[in-house]
Image (tube, rainbow, N blue to C red; front, side):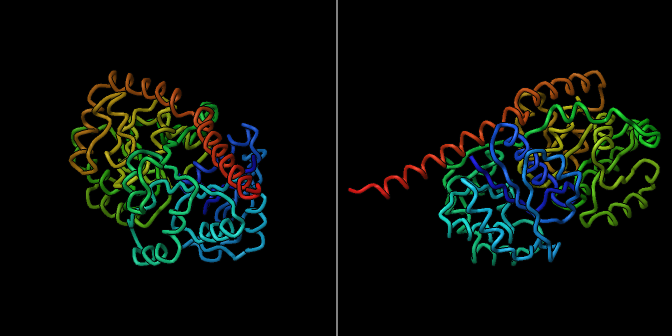
Length: 390
């Protein structure tokens, strides 16, 4: 079986959760014996990231316009990769690269699946560009797919807006690489020891509106006097809100307790996760929080909003782990969870066990291979019927 995975970016700093999902999916497909190729853009892609994808072929096109992830055309290269694949996986939605691969797949008669990962709604900047994209090609990309993958049930309504019935959609959740997470963080620098010596709440992700760092900061401001020994760490690249957040910190005179680390990765990221008292995911919209999974592997308790696509935590672990995506909701949630360190520790341990048994990539990858075999089998049957004389 030959799979072509298509994504705008494999770099965590520029691609975030979809980059990590594609990276781990490709890695574990290869470990499962699948011939896997990733087609991406070279934006932020470095040699180490490629080397970590052992046994996976990575093809990177030049990025001509970084803001909109516009690739150099590379049409012949795209056609060749599509022709070599048995099935194609398109990650995300608002993508020129996806559109080019779609055209090549239709030309070659190759089946493809789509996994928007929460991207289908018209949310955020450039709404008029997204509407035009859908009119030109986006709607067709979704409707002509051989299969549709949702990260959670919350995406069913997104697909229905594109006339795809919920019953036709396959749920394959985000996963986490348990062995990688367990090995990271063994080496801790002196600077990191100083940073993590004080109890802190952690935000991990891009500093943009959809991720809700402003909601978390306002909530922290409202409870800062109740938790005088606690700090707040923002770990992640600027997505347009850093200046605004810094200004709020200065206005509230909390510069000694609120810190901005920028992008962290590897051992530093693992250490920040493990040392946190609580990870908070204040997203206004998200398919399923990958950082919640990553933190849970270290036994770190998490607090998420009901817009993170992971409400299962409230049912399976503790109802206090999921709150509304509002300043009062986050403030109340943080105070409730941090009030009892013993309860917090038990929640962290239960989260770790829950994620290891349900969301390890070694378990989830079988859902992909099962779906792909079904699609390839259906195509072969259709080809056989078309070539068999009546």
